[in-house]
Length: 171
Length: 100
Image (cartoon, rainbow over all chains, first blue to last red):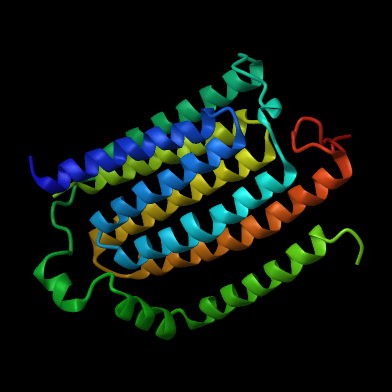
């Protein structure tokens, strides 16, 4: 039992627990707070995967910016607990549960049949190459992925303008 | 060393939880949050394969997914605000103008 496996187990359990709370929480506010917790635990798992940069982005962009936006909208719309319908077992819920369980079963069987390759390309070699560091990822983005990067910046600009246009009552 | 299949199974469970939430919740904001859960499951898969194969394409893809999720959240929440302003509700069962 090594420390990496223990940390992975703890983070995975906490991630699934808080993700379940997102779905089953009564008020949207507690859903949002559980989602923040999920993002933090996922950032821990990303660090275990040697993705330090993505973990930092996860905390800054997801748990910071996007969730503040969500909380702001929830507070603005003043949604109380009245919007929740309670734990009724309707047909759509049973169908949704069956669909999700079926997809999970298919995915688990498919993943189980992947031939396990023991070697992973991390270790002293990866440390020397700076695997997952901001410098190396930045270099990759600005050399091989420059056009998608510019497209994403354009997308964010369009999103910004579009959000103003949609939410404005009269243009 | 944690095998890659553990990460993939965690991502699959997270994706199915998000899908379950999208299917059963009626509050549009919670549906958006569940979509974010599904995007995070996709990110986890990208990063797991990036570690397995030792190249950084998965990290770059996760970066792009985060950027697209930010754009999606801003537009989606603007639409929710616009709908709430005209209908007074965010319950997606009561918003069925396009359903005829």
